[in-house]
Each structure stands twice: as structure tokens, then as C-alpha cells.
Image: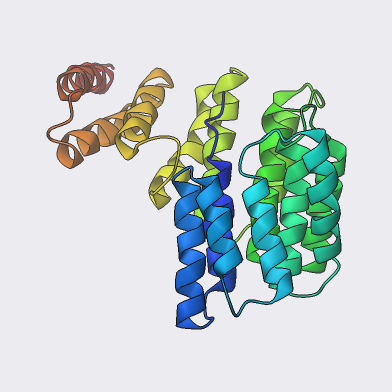
Length: 275
């Protein structure tokens, strides 16, 4: 199954980027809000937000909504309070509106006790239509891809799922966001027990970018090496196992990887000696 990304971390980082460039004192005050929230201090975060001066009301409303969304799923009463605010903010034509629409879609995806995926998809696609190529539209494609891979029942054919998500991937230009979706595509292939040759390409593409969340670089390197070995791609397996030993000399799995590399080299020697 896919590893989950911390929702609050994405929201806080994204909002911090959205307000970067304001007055130094205001930015510092907003930083204190996000620091409190990230450290699971919601009361302190709300108090700090009330003390922030010099930000417009739309920014303040979005910040308050982000704090309210920190712990999904949210109660029905809170939903009735937050959802109209995001819907109204999304009517604008600025960075705040784009982020509000993204958060509006996320509400239907992860903040309801029973997710409403069709509504979430409609909002993500509206986001892409109104702000094509924007960071928020591309991030929306990643989230849309995740529930198409794992959460909805249709289509039942795993390859069709991956083809549909491949269409979304083609719209994503930010390397880190492409990496995130490619990693999940590879894991989806494993989850649906597709042939290793079909699983490996997106994992290799994600590993090439690096910096992924949900798995350490050494874990992904060994995973690719092992899957390559099982797929009979011996040279590729040799490359990744050797890369692991060179890049992570103190890792506790060094002995196991060395043993696996010995098996790979033996298999290569046998294949080369075959008539």
C-alpha cells in the first residue's frame, strides 16, 4: 500500500511559500504560527495568528482554514464552518484562490469520514483549468493520481489505472512532484502484482530525482536492486547493489546486500558462460 504524506506539513509549507515576500515582521509572525502548528500546538498557533498584523483578510482566512484542517477527518460542524470559506476564497483570481481551491478538493478527498472522490476530482480539474501549469494544479494532479491508484474501485484493471495516472503524470513538470507520483505508480504496480518489468521504470525514475518522502534512499535503492534481480535484469541489479554499498557504507543491511550482490555476480557469470 502507499505511504501517506503528512497533510499538515504540505499545507504549512505551501502556505508559507504563498505568503513569502511580505514584510519581514509579518513573515516572522506567520512563521511562528506555522512553527506552533507543526509542533502540535494548535492553541498557541491560533493565538499567534490573532497577533499577526499587516496581512489582508483573505490571507488570514486561509491561514485559519489551514489550522482548522490540521487533523482529518473533521467533525461535521467544523466542515460546515470551513468549507464555505474555502469555496468563497476560491472565487478569486490570485495565489490565495488557487490554494483555497486545492484545499477545497483535499477536504473532499481526506477530511470527510467517507471521502467524496468524484467531487474532489471535479475540484482538482477545475484547479487545473483555471491555473494550468501552476504548482497547486500540479500538486492536485498528484493527489488525484493517488486516489485513482489506490482508493476508487474502478477501473479494476490495474494497467488501466496506471494508464490513467500516466496521463496525469504528463501534465506535471515539477521534478519533485513527478517523482512523488512515479514512486506511487511503482508501488501500485507492486500492490497489484504486475510483472516486475512494469514496476521498475517508475521506481527508477523516482530514485533518479531523490529526496522522496515515505521511503529512505537506501530502501529504494535496495528495492530496485532486488526487483531487478527477480526480473532477471542482472546488470541493473548489480548496479543498484553496488551503488548501495558505495553510498551507504555504514548501513546495517550492508552484509545482506553484499550477499545478494554475490548471487547476482554468480548469475551473471553463469549466463556469460552459457553457450
